Length: 117
Length: 111
Image (tube, rainbow over all chains, first blue to last red; front, top):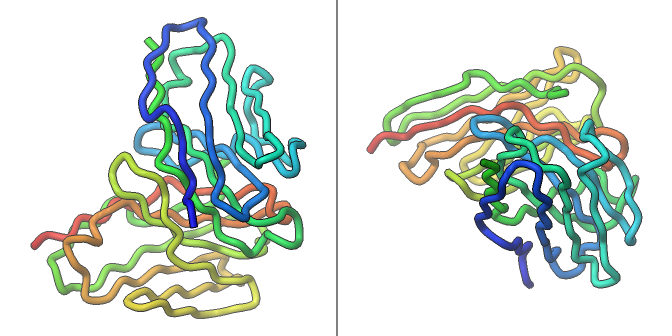
C-alpha cells in the first residue's frame, strides 16, 4: 500500500510569484484535502477534492486553487504569493466523501515547506 | 476558525510517567480524532472517537469524550522518549468535508 506523497519537500519563492504543489493520494483513496500549517499552529483546511470536483472550501482567498486528476492525485496552486503564505502545506487523502467517509481518518503526506521571501 | 483548543500548550514529563492532554470544542460534531506530528513531518492518525462513544482505547492511548461539556482528553500511559511530538485534536464537521484542528499540545518526554 503506497502512502501519501508530496512534492517538492521544500520550496523558496519570491512575493508575487506563483507556485504549484503536488500530491499523490494513498492507493484506494479518492478524496484529497489540502491544509496549511503555519509555524506553531494547527493545520487549517484549504479545500477538498472528490472525483475531480471541489467538495468544500475553507476561509482562503481565490488565489488558492486546486485540481484533482482521474488518478486522484492533486495539485494546489497559489498565485500572487504573499509573505504570510509561508507555511507547511499538507495533503491528506481519505476514502470516499460525505456520509460514507466522515468517520474515516485522514492520511497525511509529509508536506511541502514553502518559504516566501 | 479553530474549533478545537488543546490544553496545555506544552507539557514536559519524565519517561514512564503518564501524559494527559485535553481538547475543548464549540459546536456539535460527528467525531473527534487525535493526531500526532513529529517535528516538520506530516500528521499521523492515532484514534477516532464517534460522538456516541464515551471512551476508546488503543494500546497505551486512552481517549474520552464528553459531548455535554464539549471536551475530550487523550491519556498516554507509561510514556517513552519516542512519544515526544505535538498532539492535535480534530473535530469532524460538514459530513467529512473538513476537519478542524486545534493549535496542539507540544509534549516532551525526557529520558
